[in-house]
Image (cartoon, rainbow, N blue to C red):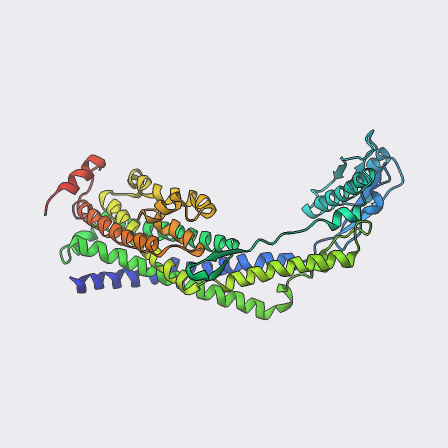
Amino acid sequence: MTNKISLIIKREYLTRVRKKSFIVMTILGPILMAALFIVPTYLATMGGDTKTIQVVDETGLFAERFENTDALIFKPLAMDIEAAKELFPRSGDDALLYIPMTELSVPTSAFLYFDTQPTLVMRSTISNTMRREVESLKLAASGIEPEIMRSIKSSVNLMTIKLHEGGKEEKKFSEVATILGFVSAFMIYIFVFMFGSQVLRGVIEEKTSRIIEVIVSSVKPFQLMMGKIVGVGMVGLTQFLLWVVLTLVIVAGVQTAFPGKFQAPQTDQMLVTDSRIAGPAQISEETLQMDDSVMAQIAEGIRTINFSAIIFSFLFYFLGGYLLYAALFAAIGAAVDNETDSQQFMFPVTIPLIIAIVMAQYVINEPNGAVAFWFSIIPLTSPVIMMIRIPFGVPFTDLALSASLLVLGFLGATWLAAKIYRTGILMYGKKVDYAELWKWLKYKG
């Protein structure tokens, strides 16, 4: 029996890894994943076109407060707004900012006329500059020195430390754990759907081509189902490992080839300061210290991650989740004659996976709550939810219970799927409903 299953696994594995689609996705996948790291960093280092903004300031309070940068040039105009609007289309400039005189002592609105859509940087720079000036005017009107008000503003760095028995302390970094947990869970969600669907399509193809009649003359239906499930799972695992390795190689290669393009921008060059509020040197130093602190925490958070445990957990829950759902997908494929008929059975099977990914935000907010606990031990949702919880720290009893129930869930799903597979794999031309599936499950033998 074992020898026959191993032959089916080998056949399924070699047949799929030799397909052009496998080769194309194995090459294209790492390129796309590497692009997610490389492209945003590269675009952040690129300098955009310089934008010129005409300024008509009837209040006389703001025009001189706008500072020119490499990205934005402000051009104050000594004319009324109607004349400026008439000349603007022929000026070649990018935008016209109009700050009207109001009855209030401190204006709080402005109008930005444009020919082409203004950039986010342009709008945020104008808004922030006017906001700072308005705050300074309001503070001055209240008899409060702006410098004093700015000096009392402080940031609080809240460190989260888990206290173990015996007084042992362990720093926890929720932000890093959140990203790592969600990415791992989402990858399992995608892979289970992707490779589980391959099992379903493979069973339907063999059934409709009648090649299954030849195969089952040599092996039992259960052996065929298990060989197909494990073979496709090995294909998925191979592709995933190749994606990880090739993505790291591409990212490292690009960073080595273009080191200057992937350096972090200098913080002090990005600062927009107001000399009436505080000196540039003072703000630069405070901002740099804050930035260094955040980066240091992120680096420390990454160092504290037990990557070996994360990788082992990911592989276990990926394989467990895939084997469970692949068995159900194989049963569905055996029960129908085409993919269209499979939809009525696919939806109830995939609902738990969809619910798990929807509940991810609630689990991230309270990874040790009751909702997170129950969803992480139910086999149909545990592959996704437990991977979200693990980076935050999971009690060993929860982990052991979840893993045990997942294995039992896979065995139970395989037993149910085998009963449906054995009957449905050789049945053609009949529309199957849930009542018919229930009859198949009750067949003895």
